[in-house]
Length: 401
Ligand SMILES: C[S@@+](CC[C@H](N)C(=O)[O-])C[C@H]1O[C@@H](n2cnc3c(N)ncnc32)[C@H](O)[C@@H]1O
Image (cartoon, rainbow, N blue to C red; front, side):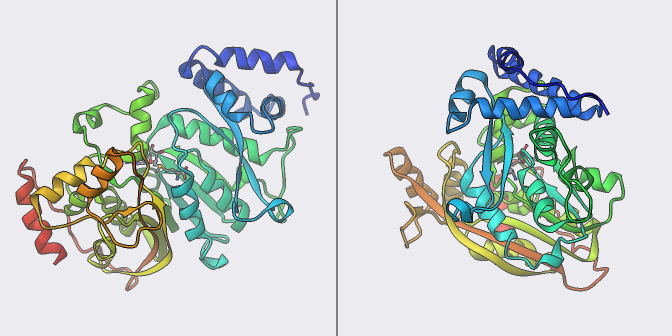
Protein backbone atom coordinates (compact mmCIF):
# COMPACT_ATOMS: atom_id res chain seq x y z
CA UNK A 1 0.00 0.00 0.00
CA UNK A 2 1.29 3.52 -0.83
CA UNK A 3 2.68 5.49 2.13
CA UNK A 4 0.16 7.98 3.49
CA UNK A 5 0.96 11.53 2.30
CA UNK A 6 -0.37 14.35 4.49
CA UNK A 7 -2.38 17.08 2.79
CA UNK A 8 -1.12 20.56 3.57
CA UNK A 9 -2.93 23.87 3.33
CA UNK A 10 -0.68 24.56 0.32
CA UNK A 11 -2.21 21.55 -1.47
CA UNK A 12 -5.70 22.89 -0.76
CA UNK A 13 -4.74 26.37 -1.94
CA UNK A 14 -3.17 24.97 -5.12
CA UNK A 15 -6.36 23.04 -5.87
CA UNK A 16 -8.50 26.13 -5.28
CA UNK A 17 -6.21 28.28 -7.42
CA UNK A 18 -6.64 25.82 -10.29
CA UNK A 19 -10.44 26.25 -10.00
CA UNK A 20 -10.62 30.01 -9.65
CA UNK A 21 -10.47 31.15 -13.29
CA UNK A 22 -13.84 29.80 -14.49
CA UNK A 23 -16.32 26.96 -14.21
CA UNK A 24 -14.39 25.26 -17.05
CA UNK A 25 -11.22 25.45 -14.97
CA UNK A 26 -13.03 24.05 -11.91
CA UNK A 27 -14.41 21.18 -13.96
CA UNK A 28 -10.90 20.50 -15.32
CA UNK A 29 -9.53 20.40 -11.75
CA UNK A 30 -12.33 18.05 -10.68
CA UNK A 31 -11.57 15.74 -13.62
CA UNK A 32 -7.90 15.66 -12.63
CA UNK A 33 -8.89 14.64 -9.08
CA UNK A 34 -11.18 11.96 -10.48
CA UNK A 35 -8.29 10.46 -12.46
CA UNK A 36 -6.32 10.23 -9.22
CA UNK A 37 -9.32 8.69 -7.41
CA UNK A 38 -9.62 6.05 -10.12
CA UNK A 39 -5.99 5.01 -9.75
CA UNK A 40 -5.62 2.80 -6.63
CA UNK A 41 -2.10 4.18 -6.10
CA UNK A 42 -3.25 7.81 -5.73
CA UNK A 43 -6.83 7.20 -4.56
CA UNK A 44 -6.39 7.72 -0.81
CA UNK A 45 -4.38 10.90 -1.24
CA UNK A 46 -6.89 12.37 -3.70
CA UNK A 47 -9.72 11.57 -1.27
CA UNK A 48 -7.81 13.21 1.59
CA UNK A 49 -7.40 16.31 -0.57
CA UNK A 50 -11.18 16.48 -1.12
CA UNK A 51 -11.75 16.09 2.63
CA UNK A 52 -9.32 18.94 3.34
CA UNK A 53 -11.02 21.14 0.73
CA UNK A 54 -14.42 20.48 2.28
CA UNK A 55 -13.14 21.28 5.79
CA UNK A 56 -11.61 24.49 4.45
CA UNK A 57 -15.15 25.73 3.70
CA UNK A 58 -16.94 24.28 6.70
CA UNK A 59 -19.64 26.09 8.69
CA UNK A 60 -21.87 27.26 5.89
CA UNK A 61 -19.17 28.80 3.70
CA UNK A 62 -19.86 26.40 0.83
CA UNK A 63 -21.71 29.07 -1.12
CA UNK A 64 -18.69 31.33 -0.85
CA UNK A 65 -16.67 28.47 -2.35
CA UNK A 66 -19.21 28.17 -5.20
CA UNK A 67 -19.05 31.91 -5.92
CA UNK A 68 -15.27 32.12 -5.95
CA UNK A 69 -14.16 28.68 -7.14
CA UNK A 70 -17.12 27.46 -9.25
CA UNK A 71 -17.80 24.31 -7.25
CA UNK A 72 -18.81 23.38 -3.74
CA UNK A 73 -18.75 20.31 -1.52
CA UNK A 74 -21.54 20.16 0.99
CA UNK A 75 -23.49 17.76 3.15
CA UNK A 76 -26.81 16.46 1.88
CA UNK A 77 -28.93 15.41 4.83
CA UNK A 78 -30.84 12.26 4.02
CA UNK A 79 -33.68 13.15 6.34
CA UNK A 80 -33.90 16.94 6.39
CA UNK A 81 -36.92 16.82 8.74
CA UNK A 82 -34.94 15.35 11.63
CA UNK A 83 -33.03 17.72 13.90
CA UNK A 84 -29.50 17.53 15.36
CA UNK A 85 -28.50 14.13 16.73
CA UNK A 86 -31.66 12.57 15.29
CA UNK A 87 -30.18 13.26 11.87
CA UNK A 88 -28.27 10.04 11.35
CA UNK A 89 -27.17 10.04 7.80
CA UNK A 90 -25.67 12.54 5.42
CA UNK A 91 -23.68 12.38 2.22
CA UNK A 92 -20.86 14.62 1.03
CA UNK A 93 -21.68 15.91 -2.40
CA UNK A 94 -19.68 17.96 -4.90
CA UNK A 95 -21.69 20.25 -7.16
CA UNK A 96 -20.72 22.33 -10.19
CA UNK A 97 -22.79 25.09 -11.82
CA UNK A 98 -24.33 22.96 -14.61
CA UNK A 99 -25.76 20.42 -12.14
CA UNK A 100 -29.30 20.34 -10.87
CA UNK A 101 -29.68 21.27 -7.21
CA UNK A 102 -33.41 21.73 -6.62
CA UNK A 103 -33.93 20.61 -3.04
CA UNK A 104 -37.70 20.37 -3.41
CA UNK A 105 -37.74 17.87 -6.25
CA UNK A 106 -34.93 15.72 -5.12
CA UNK A 107 -36.16 15.25 -1.56
CA UNK A 108 -39.77 14.76 -2.56
CA UNK A 109 -38.59 11.96 -4.87
CA UNK A 110 -36.32 10.44 -2.25
CA UNK A 111 -39.16 10.54 0.27
CA UNK A 112 -41.28 8.64 -2.24
CA UNK A 113 -38.57 5.97 -2.53
CA UNK A 114 -38.50 5.72 1.24
CA UNK A 115 -42.14 4.58 1.29
CA UNK A 116 -41.16 1.30 -0.33
CA UNK A 117 -40.47 -1.85 1.69
CA UNK A 118 -36.79 -2.84 1.98
CA UNK A 119 -37.10 -5.89 -0.26
CA UNK A 120 -37.71 -3.69 -3.33
CA UNK A 121 -34.04 -2.68 -3.37
CA UNK A 122 -32.15 -5.09 -1.11
CA UNK A 123 -29.89 -7.42 -3.17
CA UNK A 124 -31.52 -6.13 -6.33
CA UNK A 125 -30.14 -4.64 -9.55
CA UNK A 126 -31.39 -1.08 -9.88
CA UNK A 127 -31.04 1.65 -12.54
CA UNK A 128 -31.44 5.28 -11.63
CA UNK A 129 -32.33 7.30 -14.73
CA UNK A 130 -31.16 10.90 -14.87
CA UNK A 131 -29.05 10.50 -11.78
CA UNK A 132 -27.56 14.03 -11.77
CA UNK A 133 -24.76 14.29 -9.22
CA UNK A 134 -25.53 10.73 -8.15
CA UNK A 135 -26.70 11.34 -4.61
CA UNK A 136 -29.88 9.25 -4.93
CA UNK A 137 -27.97 6.23 -6.31
CA UNK A 138 -25.46 6.54 -3.47
CA UNK A 139 -28.16 7.06 -0.82
CA UNK A 140 -30.06 4.06 -2.15
CA UNK A 141 -26.93 1.88 -1.96
CA UNK A 142 -26.19 3.11 1.59
CA UNK A 143 -29.66 2.44 2.87
CA UNK A 144 -30.76 -0.75 1.12
CA UNK A 145 -27.58 -2.64 0.11
CA UNK A 146 -28.68 -3.44 -3.44
CA UNK A 147 -26.57 -5.81 -5.51
CA UNK A 148 -25.81 -2.98 -7.93
CA UNK A 149 -27.11 0.49 -8.72
CA UNK A 150 -26.43 1.88 -12.19
CA UNK A 151 -26.69 5.67 -12.06
CA UNK A 152 -27.31 6.88 -15.63
CA UNK A 153 -27.33 10.37 -17.11
CA UNK A 154 -26.94 11.83 -20.59
CA UNK A 155 -24.61 14.61 -19.42
CA UNK A 156 -20.96 13.44 -19.40
CA UNK A 157 -19.96 16.09 -16.86
CA UNK A 158 -22.65 14.94 -14.47
CA UNK A 159 -21.33 11.38 -14.67
CA UNK A 160 -17.80 12.43 -13.76
CA UNK A 161 -19.04 14.46 -10.79
CA UNK A 162 -21.21 11.51 -9.72
CA UNK A 163 -18.09 9.27 -9.68
CA UNK A 164 -16.30 11.86 -7.52
CA UNK A 165 -19.28 11.80 -5.16
CA UNK A 166 -19.11 8.04 -5.02
CA UNK A 167 -15.44 8.14 -3.96
CA UNK A 168 -16.23 10.95 -1.50
CA UNK A 169 -18.71 8.69 0.29
CA UNK A 170 -17.08 5.29 -0.20
CA UNK A 171 -13.84 6.41 1.49
CA UNK A 172 -13.39 8.31 4.73
CA UNK A 173 -11.44 11.56 5.19
CA UNK A 174 -8.26 9.49 5.68
CA UNK A 175 -8.82 7.92 2.30
CA UNK A 176 -9.71 4.52 3.80
CA UNK A 177 -12.57 2.40 2.42
CA UNK A 178 -15.78 2.33 4.50
CA UNK A 179 -17.08 -1.25 4.68
CA UNK A 180 -20.71 -2.15 5.32
CA UNK A 181 -22.03 -5.15 7.25
CA UNK A 182 -21.42 -7.42 4.25
CA UNK A 183 -17.78 -6.31 3.91
CA UNK A 184 -18.53 -4.28 0.77
CA UNK A 185 -17.96 -0.61 0.02
CA UNK A 186 -20.14 1.73 -2.02
CA UNK A 187 -17.68 1.20 -4.86
CA UNK A 188 -18.84 -2.43 -5.02
CA UNK A 189 -22.48 -1.40 -5.20
CA UNK A 190 -22.68 1.68 -7.44
CA UNK A 191 -21.52 2.54 -10.98
CA UNK A 192 -22.23 5.64 -13.05
CA UNK A 193 -22.50 5.67 -16.84
CA UNK A 194 -23.28 8.13 -19.58
CA UNK A 195 -26.55 6.99 -21.11
CA UNK A 196 -29.60 8.31 -22.94
CA UNK A 197 -32.31 6.97 -20.59
CA UNK A 198 -31.79 3.17 -20.41
CA UNK A 199 -29.44 2.84 -23.42
CA UNK A 200 -26.51 1.65 -21.26
CA UNK A 201 -28.51 -1.19 -19.69
CA UNK A 202 -30.13 -2.14 -22.98
CA UNK A 203 -26.77 -2.29 -24.80
CA UNK A 204 -25.17 -4.32 -22.01
CA UNK A 205 -28.21 -6.59 -21.59
CA UNK A 206 -28.37 -5.69 -17.89
CA UNK A 207 -31.25 -7.44 -16.16
CA UNK A 208 -33.01 -4.92 -13.95
CA UNK A 209 -35.24 -5.55 -10.94
CA UNK A 210 -35.98 -1.91 -10.43
CA UNK A 211 -35.85 1.38 -12.34
CA UNK A 212 -36.18 4.75 -10.61
CA UNK A 213 -36.21 8.15 -12.30
CA UNK A 214 -36.60 11.84 -11.58
CA UNK A 215 -37.14 13.06 -15.14
CA UNK A 216 -37.55 16.59 -16.61
CA UNK A 217 -41.16 17.34 -17.48
CA UNK A 218 -41.24 20.55 -19.48
CA UNK A 219 -40.61 20.88 -23.23
CA UNK A 220 -37.76 23.21 -23.99
CA UNK A 221 -39.32 26.54 -25.04
CA UNK A 222 -36.35 26.89 -27.40
CA UNK A 223 -36.40 23.63 -29.42
CA UNK A 224 -33.33 24.68 -31.41
CA UNK A 225 -31.26 24.55 -28.23
CA UNK A 226 -31.94 20.81 -28.03
CA UNK A 227 -30.35 20.18 -31.42
CA UNK A 228 -26.99 20.87 -29.76
CA UNK A 229 -24.94 17.73 -29.37
CA UNK A 230 -24.41 16.90 -25.69
CA UNK A 231 -20.69 16.70 -24.95
CA UNK A 232 -18.38 17.54 -22.11
CA UNK A 233 -17.52 20.73 -23.99
CA UNK A 234 -21.14 21.95 -24.19
CA UNK A 235 -21.84 25.26 -22.50
CA UNK A 236 -22.75 25.33 -18.82
CA UNK A 237 -26.06 27.00 -19.74
CA UNK A 238 -27.00 24.25 -22.20
CA UNK A 239 -26.04 21.46 -19.78
CA UNK A 240 -28.00 23.16 -17.02
CA UNK A 241 -31.07 23.36 -19.27
CA UNK A 242 -31.08 19.53 -19.46
CA UNK A 243 -32.11 19.54 -15.80
CA UNK A 244 -35.41 21.23 -16.48
CA UNK A 245 -36.29 20.71 -20.12
CA UNK A 246 -36.43 17.96 -22.69
CA UNK A 247 -36.92 17.75 -26.45
CA UNK A 248 -39.98 16.42 -28.37
CA UNK A 249 -39.99 12.63 -28.15
CA UNK A 250 -42.81 11.93 -30.65
CA UNK A 251 -45.06 10.61 -27.91
CA UNK A 252 -48.58 11.94 -27.41
CA UNK A 253 -47.56 12.83 -23.86
CA UNK A 254 -45.21 15.53 -25.21
CA UNK A 255 -48.20 17.82 -25.20
CA UNK A 256 -48.26 17.67 -21.43
CA UNK A 257 -44.51 17.77 -20.95
CA UNK A 258 -44.45 14.05 -20.22
CA UNK A 259 -42.87 12.72 -23.44
CA UNK A 260 -39.49 11.86 -21.91
CA UNK A 261 -41.11 10.02 -19.03
CA UNK A 262 -43.30 8.17 -21.56
CA UNK A 263 -40.17 7.02 -23.42
CA UNK A 264 -38.57 6.00 -20.12
CA UNK A 265 -41.64 3.90 -19.25
CA UNK A 266 -41.59 2.20 -22.68
CA UNK A 267 -37.85 1.52 -22.47
CA UNK A 268 -38.33 0.21 -18.95
CA UNK A 269 -41.14 -2.15 -19.95
CA UNK A 270 -38.89 -3.54 -22.68
CA UNK A 271 -36.01 -4.49 -20.39
CA UNK A 272 -37.22 -4.85 -16.81
CA UNK A 273 -37.64 -8.33 -15.31
CA UNK A 274 -41.29 -9.49 -15.43
CA UNK A 275 -41.89 -8.85 -11.72
CA UNK A 276 -39.75 -5.69 -11.71
CA UNK A 277 -40.87 -2.36 -10.40
CA UNK A 278 -40.46 1.15 -11.83
CA UNK A 279 -40.70 4.30 -9.74
CA UNK A 280 -41.08 7.74 -11.26
CA UNK A 281 -41.69 11.23 -10.03
CA UNK A 282 -44.53 13.13 -11.69
CA UNK A 283 -44.88 16.88 -11.54
CA UNK A 284 -48.66 17.16 -11.18
CA UNK A 285 -49.04 20.15 -13.55
CA UNK A 286 -51.10 18.26 -16.16
CA UNK A 287 -53.52 16.98 -13.47
CA UNK A 288 -53.54 13.64 -11.70
CA UNK A 289 -55.57 11.65 -14.23
CA UNK A 290 -53.27 12.54 -17.12
CA UNK A 291 -50.25 11.67 -14.99
CA UNK A 292 -51.73 8.26 -14.22
CA UNK A 293 -52.82 7.54 -17.80
CA UNK A 294 -49.18 7.49 -18.85
CA UNK A 295 -48.80 4.19 -16.96
CA UNK A 296 -52.31 2.79 -17.20
CA UNK A 297 -52.51 2.98 -20.97
CA UNK A 298 -49.35 0.91 -21.16
CA UNK A 299 -50.90 -1.87 -19.15
CA UNK A 300 -49.12 -1.08 -15.88
CA UNK A 301 -50.71 -1.13 -12.48
CA UNK A 302 -49.81 1.78 -10.30
CA UNK A 303 -49.43 2.69 -6.69
CA UNK A 304 -49.16 6.30 -5.58
CA UNK A 305 -46.33 6.21 -3.03
CA UNK A 306 -46.09 9.83 -2.16
CA UNK A 307 -47.90 13.07 -2.79
CA UNK A 308 -46.88 16.57 -1.86
CA UNK A 309 -46.78 20.06 -3.32
CA UNK A 310 -43.60 21.74 -4.45
CA UNK A 311 -42.80 25.23 -5.67
CA UNK A 312 -42.49 25.68 -9.42
CA UNK A 313 -38.77 26.34 -10.02
CA UNK A 314 -38.38 30.01 -10.88
CA UNK A 315 -35.66 29.25 -13.44
CA UNK A 316 -38.10 27.18 -15.53
CA UNK A 317 -40.10 28.88 -18.29
CA UNK A 318 -43.68 27.53 -18.29
CA UNK A 319 -44.76 29.51 -21.38
CA UNK A 320 -44.83 26.30 -23.49
CA UNK A 321 -47.73 25.15 -21.26
CA UNK A 322 -49.58 28.45 -21.83
CA UNK A 323 -49.29 27.90 -25.59
CA UNK A 324 -50.88 24.47 -25.24
CA UNK A 325 -53.78 25.92 -23.25
CA UNK A 326 -54.41 28.39 -26.08
CA UNK A 327 -54.95 25.53 -28.49
CA UNK A 328 -57.02 23.04 -26.56
CA UNK A 329 -59.49 22.98 -23.69
CA UNK A 330 -56.97 21.38 -21.34
CA UNK A 331 -55.96 23.43 -18.29
CA UNK A 332 -52.77 22.74 -16.35
CA UNK A 333 -52.93 22.82 -12.56
CA UNK A 334 -50.86 25.24 -10.53
CA UNK A 335 -51.51 26.68 -7.09
CA UNK A 336 -50.78 30.14 -5.79
CA UNK A 337 -47.93 29.78 -3.31
CA UNK A 338 -47.75 26.51 -1.40
CA UNK A 339 -51.05 26.84 0.34
CA UNK A 340 -53.46 27.69 -2.48
CA UNK A 341 -56.12 24.99 -2.66
CA UNK A 342 -57.81 25.97 -5.94
CA UNK A 343 -55.92 25.06 -9.11
CA UNK A 344 -55.12 27.87 -11.54
CA UNK A 345 -54.18 27.50 -15.21
CA UNK A 346 -50.67 27.87 -16.63
CA UNK A 347 -51.75 31.23 -18.07
CA UNK A 348 -52.78 32.55 -14.65
CA UNK A 349 -49.72 31.02 -13.02
CA UNK A 350 -47.39 32.70 -15.53
CA UNK A 351 -49.09 36.09 -15.02
CA UNK A 352 -48.85 35.64 -11.24
CA UNK A 353 -45.15 34.73 -11.51
CA UNK A 354 -44.46 37.74 -13.74
CA UNK A 355 -45.99 40.00 -11.09
CA UNK A 356 -43.57 38.61 -8.50
CA UNK A 357 -45.71 35.77 -7.10
CA UNK A 358 -44.68 32.15 -6.65
CA UNK A 359 -46.69 29.13 -7.73
CA UNK A 360 -46.60 25.50 -6.74
CA UNK A 361 -47.86 22.27 -8.26
CA UNK A 362 -48.68 18.79 -7.05
CA UNK A 363 -45.85 16.25 -7.00
CA UNK A 364 -46.46 12.51 -7.05
CA UNK A 365 -44.21 9.49 -6.82
CA UNK A 366 -45.70 6.43 -8.50
CA UNK A 367 -44.50 2.87 -8.52
CA UNK A 368 -45.70 0.71 -11.38
CA UNK A 369 -45.45 -2.91 -12.38
CA UNK A 370 -46.46 -5.00 -15.33
CA UNK A 371 -49.90 -6.50 -14.88
CA UNK A 372 -48.77 -9.91 -16.10
CA UNK A 373 -45.33 -11.41 -16.34
CA UNK A 374 -43.87 -11.32 -19.86
CA UNK A 375 -46.35 -8.71 -20.97
CA UNK A 376 -45.30 -6.92 -24.13
CA UNK A 377 -45.70 -3.16 -24.12
CA UNK A 378 -48.86 -1.90 -25.74
CA UNK A 379 -47.54 0.24 -28.53
CA UNK A 380 -48.42 3.85 -28.15
CA UNK A 381 -45.74 5.54 -30.15
CA UNK A 382 -47.44 8.28 -32.06
CA UNK A 383 -45.31 9.69 -34.77
CA UNK A 384 -46.60 13.01 -35.87
CA UNK A 385 -43.99 14.60 -38.01
CA UNK A 386 -46.37 17.36 -38.97
CA UNK A 387 -45.65 20.65 -37.29
CA UNK A 388 -49.32 21.09 -36.68
CA UNK A 389 -49.77 21.18 -32.94
CA UNK A 390 -53.53 21.06 -33.52
CA UNK A 391 -53.21 17.66 -35.20
CA UNK A 392 -51.32 16.43 -32.16
CA UNK A 393 -53.93 17.77 -29.81
CA UNK A 394 -56.77 15.99 -31.63
CA UNK A 395 -54.83 12.76 -31.13
CA UNK A 396 -54.25 13.55 -27.50
CA UNK A 397 -57.87 14.30 -26.83
CA UNK A 398 -58.73 10.86 -28.23
CA UNK A 399 -56.08 9.08 -26.23
CA UNK A 400 -56.62 10.70 -22.90
CA UNK A 401 -60.39 10.77 -23.01
C1 LIG B 1 -34.06 16.70 -12.72
S1 LIG B 1 -32.37 16.31 -12.93
C2 LIG B 1 -32.17 14.85 -11.98
C3 LIG B 1 -31.59 15.14 -10.69
C4 LIG B 1 -31.13 14.06 -9.79
N1 LIG B 1 -31.97 12.88 -9.77
C5 LIG B 1 -31.03 14.72 -8.40
O1 LIG B 1 -31.90 14.46 -7.56
O2 LIG B 1 -30.12 15.50 -8.18
C6 LIG B 1 -32.44 15.76 -14.52
C7 LIG B 1 -31.18 15.06 -15.10
O3 LIG B 1 -31.61 14.41 -16.28
C8 LIG B 1 -30.54 14.39 -17.20
N2 LIG B 1 -31.12 14.08 -18.52
C9 LIG B 1 -31.84 14.88 -19.32
N3 LIG B 1 -32.23 14.20 -20.42
C10 LIG B 1 -31.76 12.92 -20.30
C11 LIG B 1 -31.85 11.73 -21.09
N4 LIG B 1 -32.48 11.71 -22.26
N5 LIG B 1 -31.26 10.60 -20.62
C12 LIG B 1 -30.58 10.61 -19.43
N6 LIG B 1 -30.46 11.71 -18.65
C13 LIG B 1 -31.04 12.84 -19.08
C14 LIG B 1 -29.90 15.75 -17.03
O4 LIG B 1 -28.55 15.74 -17.48
C15 LIG B 1 -30.03 15.97 -15.51
O5 LIG B 1 -28.87 15.56 -14.85
